[in-house]
Image (cartoon, rainbow, N blue to C red; front, side):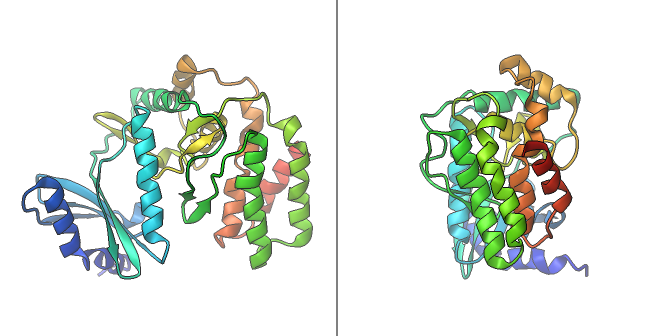
Length: 300
């Protein structure tokens, strides 16, 4: 038995509920005969479950907000689907004691080729082509475990600060993960945004957490998962897509065939990543002071 097995067992404790949900979706009986544990690729107990003919991806969240988190995820998937983006089909969202289960139709992941990267870039551009009246969304969403306040604002600079940056500074202070002096240094950035955020942009539909692991290559095309959807700045997604590791230039070139990328975007990439760095503070992963300091040194 491996150390990871208890997590998959936690998911399979709800085997009956999953099988009933999939059976209702299909209109006939369905039972789990194959299990692919995905705990190594997910922050929650998750697996691809199949009867050898039809497969689903199931993941489990614990806590009083679990059902709301999954509901928000399905809203985001629906919004992207309506924009012409491939997303997994929702099979069911199930309440369980102290948590919830989300069941999606499984997709087949294939090797990323140059063509696949190009298709991913075009899909991002297609998503960003959808415009909204204001920055934000009709309802809040979740960025991982962190609730994202999407109450609309007219200004991107204000939205970026008040909805992305400021709440994480406040959390870090409240929990003692940030010192007052360090937080005050970060807050100085607010007064510089009108100067450093670049040209004004229309509110564009964004994934909101578009790192490459949330863009799956499938035979049908790029499939987007785990969204934090809202109307925001397209450069946010472009800055997130290679946050964990580099992506081929083919993605950006294909994107630029459909939508222009401002020539100074690369200068702003680290500015848009500031929420990631502060989320590490919020997530008890330690303060990435070097990265935050580099952003402050560059933009203050």
